[in-house]
Image (cartoon, rainbow, N blue to C red; front, side):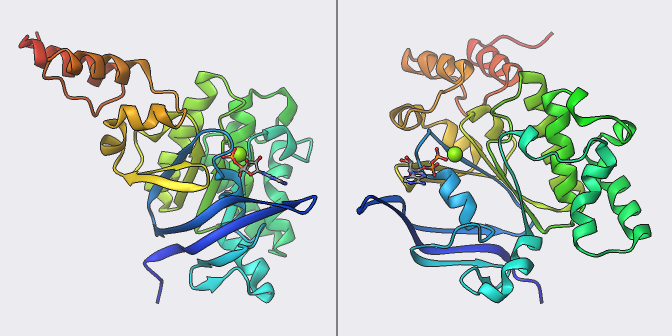
Length: 285
Ligand code: ADP
Ligand code: MG
């Protein structure tokens, strides 16, 4: 039977020890991730996001508490490979994640290490490239591609290993707005069409708009957890933890402070315009 929660984080803390000083980067966190969901973890630099991410596929083990992946405790060293197959990780810099000089060879790298047959590898590579919209670039050289394209190749390399869950640690941080949008669209597609559980770590609030759930971290703790609309409404909380609130959100918030009855739980320019238009009583033509 498949577990409802693909990931269970139970009273997890992580402490770094440096020159005999102990620093708690993650503090007594509880969090369950439902299979098939799209969760965004938001937080300012230093809030413990990367430390938490690395505990989700056993790259780090908790100092206290337990991380359970599809029923397996990451403390179980014998299950290390099984856990790494279930949870694939994508990092910030695509250049550090691409190895081969041809796109399709790069994507084949993971499946080859799983010891699959050449025919199976072929199918998986093509399928993975199609699912990130990069199939037509299969014979290209990665270093000639844009940042967004390179990052999509890195995602394809992970997808080709058919993980249940994808954890991405600030995958858009080095990309331009176009590249960022490509990645977000790709993740939404993978989540909807392949039912892959997605955990996207970011400090860009806009990227959380289409998520099922937003978890906000600050100073090693979870300080908010809810639907995007619920989280975005709390502008003062987000600002207090150093997150850049989109200008559209700030505008709606300022209008609300002035007594306009605008809907403040939206982010896109289009929805913001609709919210203001509705408050002004104007009709769409
Ligand atoms: P984020 O990804 O949200 O920026 P991190 O998990 O990287 O946060 O870091 C959380 C905190 O842990 C930071 O204060 C950081 O300085 C500290 N930290 C991270 N890695 C180490 C390390 N190897 N040794 C000591 N402290 C660390
Ligand atoms: Mg980080």
